[in-house]
Image (cartoon, rainbow, N blue to C red; front, side):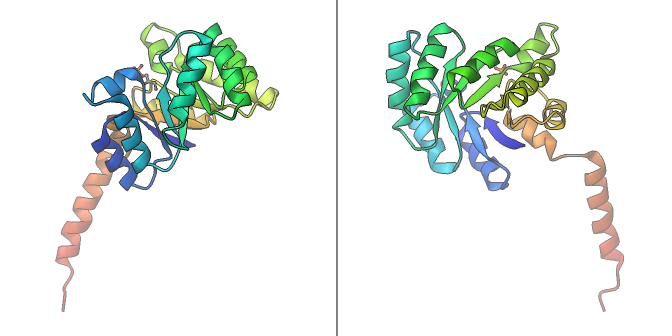
Length: 215
Ligand code: G3P
């Protein structure tokens, strides 16, 4: 499974990239707004750090405008994937962009039918938001399973990015059911590296090493 970082924070992106496990980055307007810098500046900086798909979101709402905005975003860097919100205007834009070779990530997906339509329109990626479904009492990971089954049934090449991840168990579940990508907030990625028994074990090995006669 590919691991993307779900952030626009440059320090976190640099740090995660240095671990050698990072395959890409996803951003959204909320994440970029937190950084207090210009949109394009942040996206360019991320592209200069991580050599993999970088999602940048279009904010226009009409098909023609989305297409123009997406084309402009895709010119920032060859690795740009344009995030487009899931609705009818978005689908029409994805269809046109897929014919022109612009990579798209259909976002704000909350049902398997939305994901089916996104794949038929030619989306490169689809992003089901599982945490936001969990928040309203619906098991988010269930729709990921349904989407994966549908895509396998009909051999869609659209990749499934499990998004709105809240904790490490979401990542395990995504990997167990064979999701293509998990996009993970930095604090969750940090927690994935840790286990209390690992720390205890390292401490004991270091103490015991000191007891070994050196001559
Ligand atoms: O990738 C989408 C993600 O950023 C949404 O996460 O935590 O705002 O539901 P959240």
